[in-house]
Length: 133
Image (cartoon, rainbow, N blue to C red; front, side):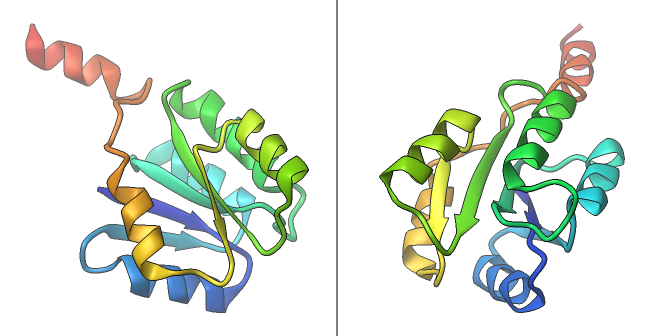
């Protein structure tokens, strides 16, 4: 499974990558702009997005743009330092499938990831149909 991690903090990108490798293929990026450029040309299965990016887009806006590109089955986790019930509801209502609170707990993190399997995206669906034909 290929996981895209978007976080503006170098240390957090490093920590997430170290926790997930070698079990997963991980690409880390520092901004929403980089993520959108990457997503337009490369496939990945799940995104892990920092909610508070220091960018022109926050994590929710990035999620919505990625979902427009990849289709409604696209799956993303939110990572954040601060989450209360109201914030959690907002994130889940926006389309995040899980919320990971910093600091990260590796066992909890990998257990959550294990619940999700790659889902064909809009860009992958035509290839799947052609193979079946």
